[in-house]
Length: 245
Image (cartoon, rainbow, N blue to C red; front, side, top):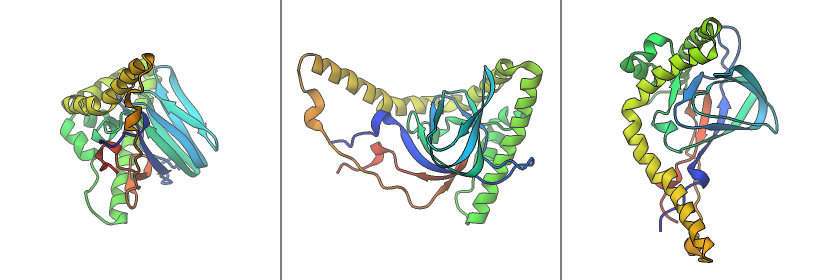
């Protein structure tokens, strides 16, 4: 039997938002957007904010105990850490964000050069804590430099026009990966959606359908933490990669 996917074929990770201050003394993560996936935050502890930009304009959502916030693809978001902010991050389309669905708000000249973007977005494969932290912070600061450009464009041209230019650049960057994304999506999200459709059809005729195939899965967190775009991540392997138990 295959191992069941995590409900909805989403991915979950625990995030300790960076406390590195930027040039203005504001601590937080790297501004970015997702090109195909929605994202949600469940506050676990601490406090902070998520700064967002949509065609409706700029907004600030406080993140405190009991708050859950989420947003759709194309939303530029930046996490700000006021006091040891930790989140449970829930990502739609498990696998796509890890495959490059996210686009950082680097300066436009980097976004217009795919090779330059890949080099700027990559972190070292190996290294000690200090080396990796230095690289992650430099990447964050470069995204903030591009974010400042974006905010200037919002002031000059309005949010809808400024975002349209960024979205066009993001689409060009991810275009070469979409065929692989589609195959992954068909094997996970589409498969789960079709399974539910078939089960509803079965239940409509009083047929138990897949109920006899009930299974339980478990995943242990990978050891240590990764340096992510917005903070230090504790991650779990995707369910479809787990052996059946």
